[in-house]
Length: 161
Image (tube, rainbow, N blue to C red):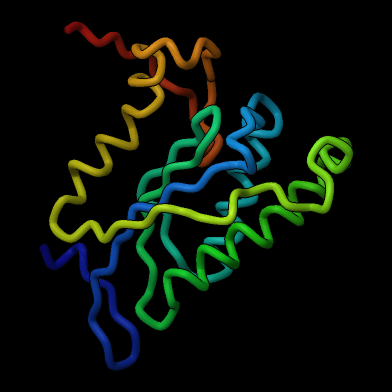
């Protein structure tokens, strides 16, 4: 358990949060090239704030992230920073989206956040299998070959029920 704890000057902490947010109107905009760019952008923004991405998945119409946020950063201000800056960066890199989405608002107003506590492994597994669950539910037919957050090749896994 001690490897899960981090420390600041006078604080030892273990703050992990499961965050889910979606593009405006749940548009299925997270495809191919833009999916890779969104992963890179979110990774850059998390590194700037000192937030560790433990697990993340970019589904077709929403993003799941398991992150470790230092206690000096408010969760709502971090999510606001993440969504606001990433929206601007997405529109800068993909100027054609300005005409489709207008007024530079890419993400929905709200988001879901949950503290993980001691369920870290269960949440990681849930996020890892989210795309497979969407495929099983026939919501997603697009096969991704690289993970947008790590850039690594995605392993094919067959689920038997």
